[in-house]
Length: 446
Ligand SMILES: Nc1nc2c(ncn2[C@@H]2O[C@H](COP(=O)(O)OP(=O)(O)O)[C@@H](O)[C@H]2O)c(=O)[nH]1
Ligand SMILES: [Mg+2]
Image (cartoon, rainbow, N blue to C red; front, side, top):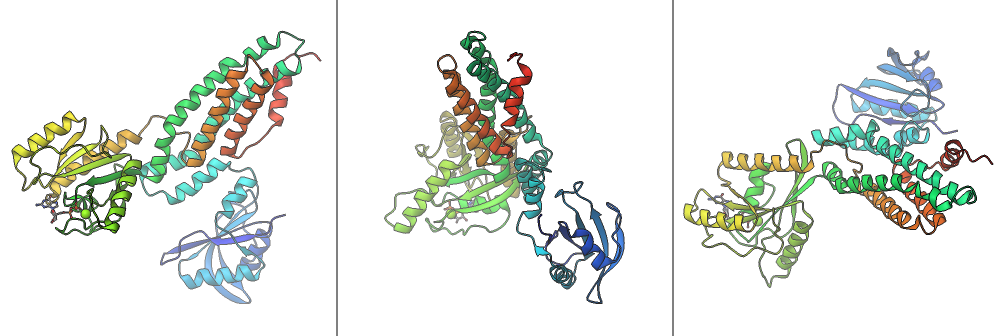
């Protein structure tokens, strides 16, 4: 039996109310020790908490009887006044009563172990706690609610059905032609593989919602990248001078655009340099830009006389941002724009000196991010861990499909491995299911 744990559920700092939670078999005795009689489950009651003959605080006490609780165990919440001393006195009393301070995530871990949540839902809880933007909140909430888990259950169902057919072909080869029985598994596996293909193509989107869409500001020294970053995020995140080569490291600033988390990075100006530190900065700039979802190639609109050659890091579809339009020459800007369009770049003009101009660019970026990340369907992967397992499952399925006509046993084994890869995502591994399915869907008669 597990021990009883406690932890503050609210952040430290000045607040009207602080919540301290406990979970485990001693929950009821601890309430009785601190508050006298335990309240009925799920009924909030006002009590004076006392320990060692002294009052700690007036508190709202809530009790949950397992398994109908978040952790699945008997648990309770004490809503006390938010002062630090109050919380500390209560925690000291709980420790004195033999409870242990919970480890990070331990309440959710218990919920998982008691079957209240699967692994993906538990991850959703963590993401919901960390959510800073609307999109993160929606995605995490869907994950907690089991939207992601239900897709995996559906895939698992398809796998189990196919596996049942393959195993029947292996176990009862004299019934029918084993190849013919095995072939029945093919349509289901094909369908599943197509769904995994689509999910993988979509996985990046889910991860970007969670971790942030990455936008790199790249360009020559003095193009106005740092000034633009500061203007976009409305604070002095990067140092601006008129000395070329001022920015040397990557300055990564999180911001919210259209409800999505975005990481925008200012980078060292791209140029050949004999300065070792700056050269390393340029190398990092290229590496970050390479991994980014979108590159804004900032070109000094004032000095642009003729179109530059496209930098190697810039890809078609990236943005050419002509800067300093407040002092730039209109004809030069038009020429640069025509050139940018001919290179398949989206061209934007901006003056960091104008809040309106920066606002328009911010709006355009927000629309771009929203259209890149928004999707009708809930993504099947929000973490690298998910995408890796999905890829693994797809590879096994591909192999299984090529083996069906040749080596049914190998195909069955690969389908099993694909299932295991998917089950790692939700943390469910249940081989009994497959056995049950073999005997329930086939009239084998043996
Ligand atoms: N007039 C004007 N000057 C700008 C603008 N953006 C940047 N600058 C100036 O251009 C110089 C280089 O800017 P900086 O942001 O450091 O360029 P970076 O090297 O690309 O980061 C600085 O003196 C800025 O004040 C702009 O929109 N209008
Ligand atoms: Mg700079």
